Length: 160
Ligand SMILES: [Ca+2]
Image (cartoon, rainbow, N blue to C red; front, side, top):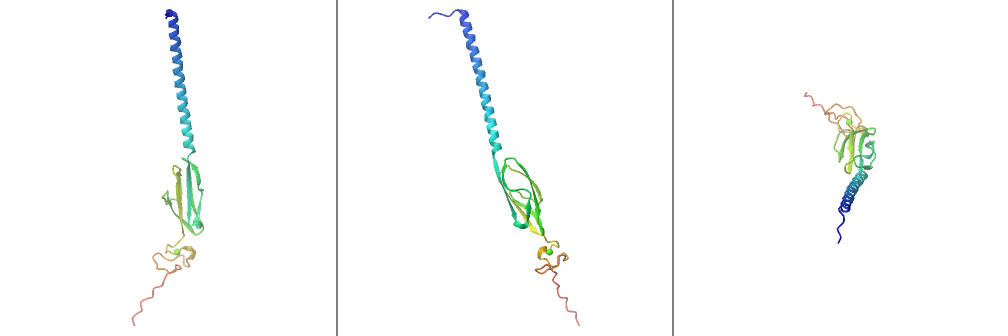
């Protein structure tokens, strides 16, 4: 086998070194591009994740919520306000959220199952709701009958 002249061997070395360098750069570039694509794809997938929001109103005629249930993108921030119907007051949120505030902010990072609890208004607090309270202004601590009126306890019979 005939040895290549020195100059020729040197230029051949330079050629291989250059080729190797270019090849390495290509690999690095393609790897970088791949991981960027992966990252983009992953981010897109994460953004595509949706969670279900279920809202129950109890009782159904008790009021409305200023947000409808359904699917929301992961990370969505929602405000829910409970507005009582006539004769009702807002009581609390139960389920995935426990709160007595009528306005709440939730972040959709999981499925949410929320119940808004309303109660019939009872202005005088006698335990008889306003809609059936025939005496809606009974004094506090009065004992009332089923229609919310004070039960007159018989006066002790005066001695004769
Ligand atoms: Ca009452």
